[in-house]
Length: 168
Image (cartoon, rainbow, N blue to C red):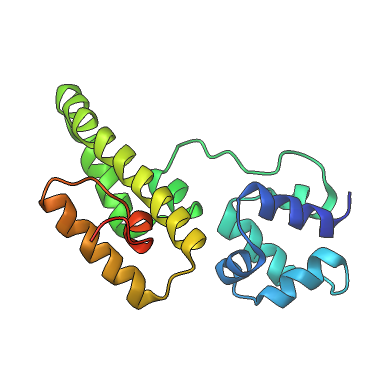
């Protein structure tokens, strides 16, 4: 395996596209594409930036020998979260949760899990309805307004049914 293949393997293992990977090391998407295709030589600076940003074993990146990542003696939640693209707010939220006692954490899970599941289900439903209807934004907003009004009246409906004129 050559360095081009190792860069691509690393990028994919981090679940990053070429644009995001390049942004993290200060180069453009096109440069990453050229590195991965072997059409541009990977400079020592880029190798250094990759190793520093993603905690990669330089020997592995250059030669394929050893483990991909350098395993630190200690675990840093901040570094772990940043490597996965978390925002500062998300990191603070996780830290706040870690400071809670176990009983409070279990109570929070009981409260938030159904809410999360409902939101995820609604997002999937909205996506399906939008793509199947091919409605304009104005029509979609109007249908959503009607759906909210129907919900207030105790009628269960969907934007899809409203769009077809089944509920008015």
